[in-house]
Length: 222
Image (tube, one colour):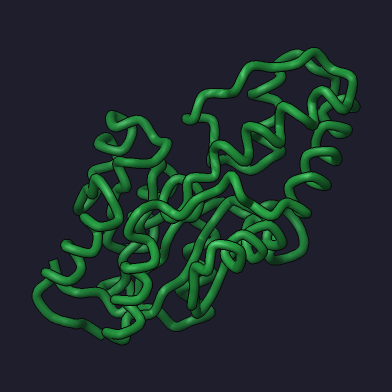
């Protein structure tokens, strides 16, 4: 593999372990809205946008009740100090290495813009040249492929020298959609078999493994 000139990172399950925060906030929001308490959801449910997550987590719940839970979740999550969320080991080292070697770093996430930026600031995860979130632009929510497309267009990224790192099949498909090198984060929330089915160019078991991969790549491109 050739060293990239830019790397796009998914957020939840790739740069940060947000499961404890999301799980606790969901459980509190459900009870706050007068619904029966729920058990902690499986880690594999983390990743899709909130409007997809809630119906899957609360099947059979009326739309009006789901809307109330959404409001309660957003209010709690957007004002959190994110003490239950942690950067995966190696996250800061990876970003520091990329910055010191002139590799541009970006985030493409199905999370909303406000909590994304507040979380990154709280965890001191920076710098990123660009952040694309599900609600960055007005209108319909965008897919991960849309996010990758927009980052590549807006920042003039070359497919042949760009890597995408993510822990779900949608991350890897987005990379393939745009001719980007797909790196599967096997330590995240996606099932190993779903990642393998997308034929990533490389698979890492940790962010420190990613650091080994990118620092050992042959030469800078672009």
